[in-house]
Length: 130
Image (cartoon, rainbow, N blue to C red; front, top):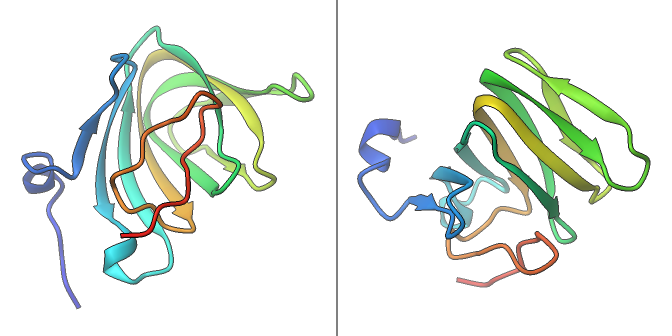
């Protein structure tokens, strides 16, 4: 058993800020923790809008605070995001995420990420080994 404090992790290299300034993410659980998934607290800054397509990972996202929407780039279907809503990218869905008000999100990735990934040109994380 172990415990981690979000505020403490935010002071380490577990906190990652996007190069484009759209988001920041603190990775509380990574592949090295041997849980079979990774767990992140991610902030999407107000007014930001970007495309992602996790071709190598499944992701579920729970909204803690804020307001926005996620749109399927394949079907055009939109889901309103607000506190208490979970959205699930269960088919490696290409999607656009928009933050109308700053979003604070709890994200789970399967397979887990190592913490060294960066989004590629498709908006995906490559599969990395430690």
